[in-house]
Length: 339
Image (cartoon, rainbow, N blue to C red; front, side, top):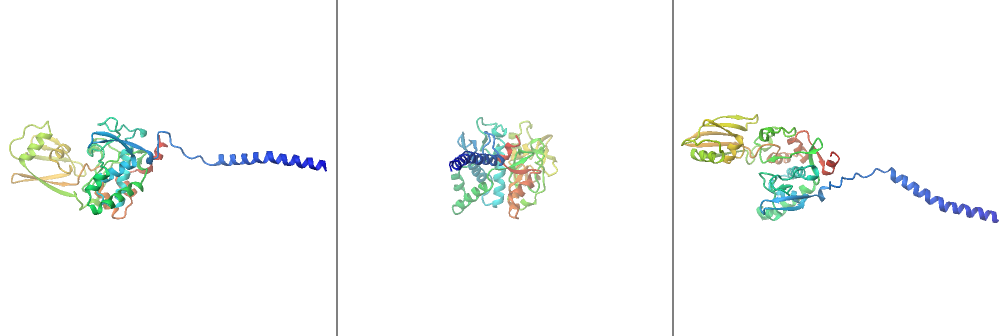
C-alpha cells in the first residue's frame, strides 16, 4: 500500500511540474508561428496622427494642425462643394499627396518661401486652405452644413490614401479646367514627369471656364505688358502688333511676337490676367478680344473634368488614374516600406 502511495505521489508531482511547462512551451511555439505585425519606422505615423506645419498667409504665421483636419480646409477652398462626392474624394487624395510629399518624414523640403513651414495657404504657391468658419460663411446658409458634411466624408472615406509612382508620392498638381486637354509638365515647368502626361479630357466640356472671352483696348494691353514684362521696350501708341504664336500640341501658347520682340505665353497670360495660356485673339475697332479655353496651368487633375467623370459614375480612383499616368493609390503607411 505504501509503495502504491509513493508511486501516486511521484506521478502527481511530475504532472504538476511538467504539464505547465509543456503548456507554456506550446503557447510560445504557437505565438512564434504567428506573423509579426508590420511596424512603421518611428518617424512614420498613420495619417490620422500626422501633423503638418502650415504657414497661414492670412495671419502671417506658422500653425501646426492634424494632417487630415488640414485637408478638410484644402478641399473646401480648392473645389466647389457642389461637386460630386467622388470628385471631392479625388481632390482629397490629391491634396493629401501634395502635402505628404513636402513632409520631412518622406524626404520633403517643406515650403521654400516660409522657413519652418511644410506648406503654405497661398494657392499660387502651394495649396489654398481656409478655416471651417470661412467655408460655412461663403456657402448658402441652407447648404452650408450639408456641404461641410460632404467634404468631411470625402476626407474620411479616403483617409491615408496617397498617389504614388514607383513607390514615392507624386507631385500631385491640379487645376480648375483644362479646356479639353491637359498639358505635359515640361511645357509649364521644364521637367518632364512621366506621370504628368497630357490627356484628352471631354469631361469638362460646357462647364464654367470651358470657353470665355475678354476684351481690352490697345492701350490696356500695352500698359499691362509694359508693367509685367520688364524686358519689353516701350510700345508705340495704339494696339500692339501681336504676331504668330508658338503653341504646344494642346494649343497652349509657348511664346508670341509682340512687335519686334518675343514674349512667353505664361508671361503674357499673367500680364493680362487671362485664365490660361490656351488663347487666341482678334483685333477690331481699336479693341483686342481674347478667346480663352480652360483655367489654370492645365497639368495634372482637371477639377471640372473630375466632376464630369464622377457624375458619369467614375470612382475617385478611376479619376485619379485617368489624369496621372501609371500611378498607384496606396496608404501613407506603405510609403515607409519603399524608403
